[in-house]
Length: 398
Image (cartoon, rainbow, N blue to C red; front, side, top):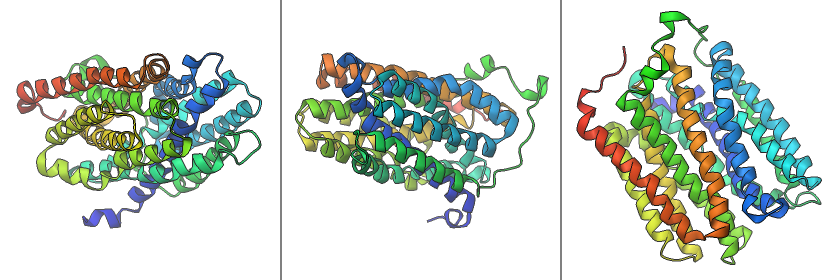
């Protein structure tokens, strides 16, 4: 294992924060759809709490970018964790009182934390030299493996912690955010540079987003997250419809998130050895394979294998798109460029969060998987377009 993995304390601590962030996300995924199904006025609204989390993230991206630019990484991340604690406690109260719209509101507010957490991977690149950025991003992404193990188990163990089912899970998430605040306090980020104005602030956003490299990086990040979320958010509901229990759903989600983040220990090395675009192409191929397996049946093994491959495929595409995006903007353009990418991710994920509940409860698991082919084909077409027509002429912005 490369020496820098052992020597960079800040990187390891940030990877731990990523793991705690994903513990929050995985627990939300495991419980929000089921809480929604129990409390929603009509069944197709079941995934509104899931969608609320993503919509909140999308609405927060611009605000988070401004806070990051003004206060720096560390302070902004700590504010996000405070919001996580408040929203988790609000969610616990909403569940205890059986107030569906309070739960939805809590998840929307929690989206501010999500918008911050999505920047951990970008912050990782600032903790190392330029030659190690891909490996740093990959390692911090691998920290999500903690969430793969802790999230489903936390959801399962805390589900009946209090008298009202699932209210204890939200209390547990507040404790997780409090722990993350303690870890974040020990991370030393590079000195914050006050935001610049005029020409010193870099190119206009319209110029940045027109670059082919930005289009492919942003589009791949958004579509890979969208198709992953479309299938993942629907899985607990689909498994319940198919007669499989909550413990089975937690098992499938655990293996899915292992697939999402365990490859992070090697993805950076693979990208440096074989190239970012090749690894992204392999990831798209794995997503196609996932859809094929999901369409082959609805037994526990098919759910488990399909969601595991979906996770690995997502890791290759999403980590690759993050590494690719680092070549699309200058340091002074960081906050607005990263904010635009995360907005695209959240907007796409919000749409798929709503669609997953509406489709799986009205049209079924098979149609949901057929629909997932559309964004997957778009990713493949975008990668082919960039590789064949623009990659050789692309250069890092000066």
